Amino acid sequence: MAFKIGFTRTIYYLDDMSWPLWFGVLLAAAALLTALGEITARQGWISLFAARKGVHITVAICCALAVEILPASTWFTGAVGLIVLFLWYSVRKQWFSIDQVDGRRSWGIFYFGLSYFFLLLLFGQQSPFTVMLGMAVMGLADSVAALIGKMLPNPSLTLGRETKSWAGSAVFFIITGFLLFSLTRDRPGMDGSDYSALSMVALVFWLTVVENSAGKGTDNLSVPLLFGWVYATMMEGGESSLQERFLWVFIPAGLFALLSARIKFLTRDGAISAASLGILLYTYGGWNYVVPILIFFLTGSLLSRLLNPTANGVEKSGARDSWQVLANGGVPALGLFWGYYTGQQSLGFILFAAALASVTADTWSTEIGMRFGGTPRHILNGKKMAKGLSGGVTLAGFLGALFGASLIATVVYWLNPDIPVLWIIALGFAGSILDSIAGVFQAKYQAKDSELWSEKRQENGIQISGVSWWTNDLVNAFSALIILLFSALLFGGAG
Image (cartoon, rainbow, N blue to C red; front, top):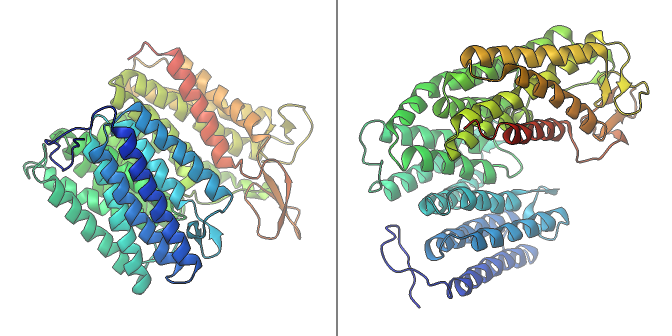
């Protein structure tokens, strides 16, 4: 039974009959290692934290070995997808002690499996080495950094909502840099010429910042996917033009993050997410993508500040956090990634513009409707509602949505006259309507000692209506995603 192993991928290959056996062996090994971590933690032989990190390291090794030993296939990726569903259910039901942090549920183990699934889906066949290296970075660098950070918590370094340490971040930087430089030095595009070495250093620094700013285990998703995309598309093939743009935008994006957090347009983790989004948009798309999303961000933030909607009876969030950045900016960015990955750049830009027009229309509709719209009406039954609650609409809000969509359509048309500008306006306006309909089912809260409503979970509040997990961020992302997918069907021949 021959098999292949090693970073050069030049030895032997599994035959079609043997891969299920090896998949079963690696799956059993991962399950056994997870069970051992759970047992040792419950018995008190080692700390819960150490057990969790031990499981991360050993399971990451199994994932890396699987990519080296098993041939990439639909069956392999599908089987991993089923495991991810199991992980989601296990965390939801709190079956394992190792998925809990400080008495609260952590989705880190689920995000870890989900990142592996997406890496396999995107790069399993084109660049298996990317999948292996992405899991190694997350499993080894992050876990060891967390252990060191636990031992040496001071001085602290807090870029997000969780307190981490300088020592842990330094260890993450060192281990990630060592893995990338040592394992990729003989690979195509990584010969040290042109911008490759500097790009690698910048990538390692970027991953370190993202890891430090992430919370609740989300770094198990963001770090591998961010690394996987950048390495496979920019480093593996030696794309010097992309590397040059990546380095050029790196410092301006950092300054943007510092300024936006300073003036409280964004939280610290939100600023890092926005800067990361800007780096990706400029590197892979250029100014055509950066300018429209900057206009969305600036106009939305200024409207929120100038119109002061909080005074109208519903508590809205102030500075936008990372989830809000990803819900509003991440979905339009999928258009860019779609176009780049499939080679249909024209279609990708249309999808980007349509989704961005949708989130802009919704933002303008909310801010203008709350300030000038009077008493809103329920979008489905026409009953009066409190100002600012999702699902309520006003004439001023409709006009705000139309203005917001028209602004984005005008900007993208100026950047690219081939864009179907009227369709972008219509799709953006439709997205705001869809957002209002989806918002009907959003969770709404009220503090016990206040008449102020909120769409954020309250510590001492009562849920008045809606589905608890259906948040405003999910509503925004859902409506923008539907518009993006509909646009893909509508303009599928544009690429």
